[in-house]
Image (cartoon, rainbow, N blue to C red):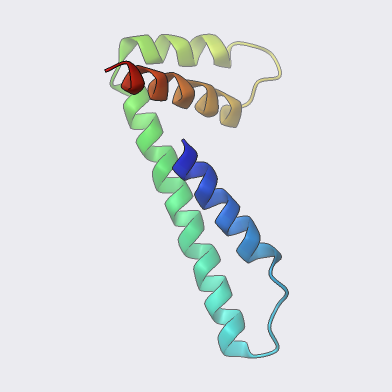
Length: 90
């Protein structure tokens, strides 16, 4: 989960970088942002695959998702924290 947060921070930093006057530099920043978004999506897909592979995680996911006002992102973060705790216990 910390890697996901790191990738999101990198993307936000790249997004907030003032646009360079050079077209080449601007294209490089856009390419970096695109790459970081792809990494984020891959991490989310991996998290979903891990959740789907374990009945306990599916139950936790469904329980958290059933709370009104809790969105998909919050559920992924909560279940990811659970996954991290499971691996720390091993």
